[in-house]
Length: 364
Image (cartoon, rainbow, N blue to C red; front, side):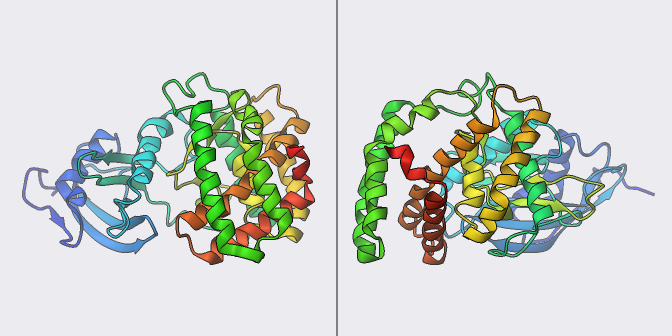
């Protein structure tokens, strides 16, 4: 016989934080509509790992009473104890995404969020997310690229997310913030200072043509930013859309690709995510083989979701614009003390894309 939830039968692994307490989880799951009359009986630590910014715990749950449909496990995401406060804005940003934006999006694009909170006084935060470990997987171990079929599925999911917010009237009003020209000018001045130090650091490892490209980009940034300030054909962008931030279904016919890690989301030109995925992370042979077909598939998916007035030529031009802007990314990564194995390879790859796509002509 099931005991009444008020009886003291609750157990929580002592290694878990207070938010993972059985009684707390019972309350949160009921509030989220994921638990009816039952209650969490036991919470067990299944696995824990750290990323640069986060501490991620997989917890197992057992219930008492009517718990039909309630999750048997959850992912609890919290700040990394070492670096969390230094990068607290990322946590603030991701909590905002899951609690404000995700409920307004079509289902099955991102993991379901059962609870999220950011404490402005302590900078502590947490996200209680759907655990897709048993149904989904990351395609490969970084830096190995996925198969072509897996990449197509990833690009379709990204296009679906972009289409869900395409030119939405809420952008910059109740959802996200537009950067004005003054903010862009300040960002450009900050970048110019960082680039000067970056160039000094690299010395002759940054050749004259690449230095010139950076200097011309800095000089012409206000003109190039007109594409952003037009506020047309814009969407919510992921900001870190490499292929390892997508979960692929183990049973392709039974589920969909999910996108995760939204600490860098914002309003932007959607091709920024595509350029980040392909131009920054792929070596030329693979990029040259897949770039155009994937742009075709992305465009086709946009149209299938009702996006209008955005032709294939406009997509191609936006993509080149985004590739050019992404030469700034390795500099920012260097400033943020990202390991050289990441920013140096990104630098080489993105400039090979700039060469292939003749992006420098956008600076003329």
